[in-house]
Image 1: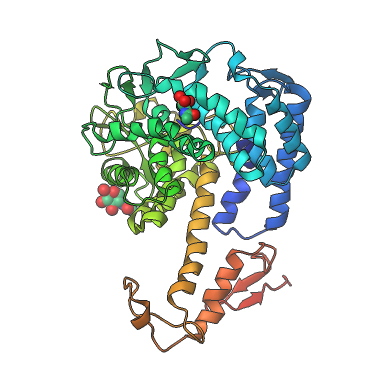
Image 2 (image 1 turned 60 degrees about the horizontal axis):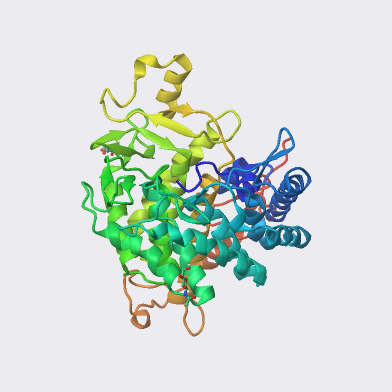
Length: 490
Ligand SMILES: *[C@@H]1O[C@H](CO)[C@@H](O)[C@H](O)[C@H]1NC(C)=O
Ligand SMILES: *[C@@H]1O[C@H](CO)[C@@H](O)[C@H](O)[C@H]1NC(C)=O
């Protein structure tokens, strides 16, 4: 449940180019924009969204873009300004970044009236401040991060050490002991960073204890933890398991905590591997009407629930990142399969934007899909695409774009690095005998086929170039990657 109500500015900015990016990833010929112009367009979308927030909602958490008003969904801590800080910095929007920092200066977390969500405040406010502090070195950002961190850390004051769902300046909110997996399991990166920057290890220790506690929970499927728990008693409520809302970012944080701390074989990394192995066995299924389409389902009482949410489309990116970090190619195959479905959700809609949730047909279980209730166009969609849209909204979510970014970066770039590392000789580059050998010295062959220069290096170069460079609507490549200019129609 990374972002059940995510209206982050980054999402806003990237959302508008979602289709374009999706098309680019599958190398659609015709009218491709350049990488630079795409970057510029995204930057302009960001600037425009930011300006509207400043004009119409300064001092509030979020902008209501139709009415031009502000709304406090997170206790009135200028959440949009904080969530935008690192985006503005990365896009070199300096003036806007300074505006955001000035807004942060005025926030007083002690004065927030009402309760704050431990999870949402952690990922947006604490995370946003720490990341922007690390990028920019602006000391006020760390001061504010420490202030909110000292409030949030009180959530862990329970008999089990699991954090409650809501806090305020006085401490944990007593009636918020029913918690969800994604909320208790998605704060370890932030508190680790807060410990790193303040030199106070307490934050990280309290937060990482959640992983220790969860590692001892006995579950039906190893590593897949039911999403509802009681922070007071540590008991599980029900047995709904999912990589969608309520579960998602717990699994993401196991992996990213392992990456952040550089510990492949630490507890978090091992828990991640166990969970993903179970996921592949019991939650990844293909549609019966479109067997080539794979979905990441949920389970309740052991029964498969044939639904997939937009939120779940973060999973291909996670699997791709994890496969690279852990050297597990099998996960990358699953990542690609799920990515194809997430792209399909976008490409097969009228707008080119992906829906909030779909249902697919799986096996012949009657519970799978109530086919009698479908209208004609839904039945047609089911037969053609393997799914029907069950929730048609698109709330500016990032997950599909996020995953595309990871798949793109974890393929091309690592292949090139591996070529440099393992095929490089004193003079040039050579074929190698065994891709699973860890002895580079004896692995070289005395050849360097011409297609290395003609194709391998050229395709790598094209992959990282602007798409206006030898655009696919002007050139066709022969089977040795030699480009021929497309002929004008007579
Ligand atoms: C470290 O942080 C914790 C939690 O806010 C606090 O209770 C403790 O006093 C801090 N320790 C030091 C040495 O500042
Ligand atoms: C779909 O799943 C079934 C059952 O697991 C499997 O036998 C089949 O090979 C899959 N189809 C494709 C196209 O992958």
